[in-house]
Length: 130
Ligand code: HEM
Image (cartoon, rainbow, N blue to C red):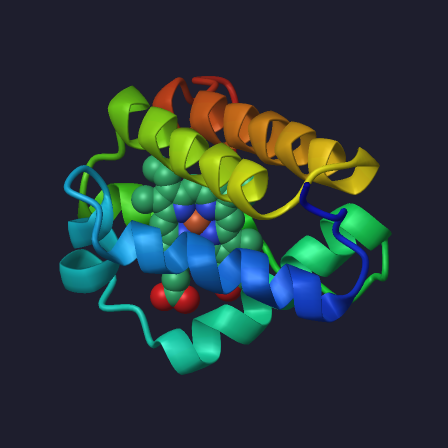
């Protein structure tokens, strides 16, 4: 039986395991490896902060994911299939490593943020000036 997500070390393990899957993934790997050419040394600590904030409300993350993914969408079209794959990999990673209240919260947060990113990027509001 897995334990719950309790400390930053757990978040680090979750994020590291997730991106190991992402990098090797047939559907979304190329976006990280070839299009965005991600600098993992920089990206991973940002993601630790992001998820620590999303799960423990630490206030550690102050970024603008909407803008970053919008820019990415201009470099290569993001599709529903990409978001579905991202969701599947993230949920599978949480379930593989953890179980409990925070693990459930992490999956919920991932899905709700993913839905917002997806809807704003794939179906932008034509009346919005942003
Ligand atoms: C189609 C699905 C997705 C793709 C292809 C994607 C790809 C990327 C890429 C390439 C970056 C930039 C990495 C860098 O160079 O630093 C990034 C950043 C990020 N992504 Fe995603 N992403 C996806 C979905 C999501 C979802 C659903 C979430 C949250 C639940 C998320 C959260 C973030 C965050 C927090 C950052 C860092 C923003 C910052 O630097 O402040 N992404 N993503």
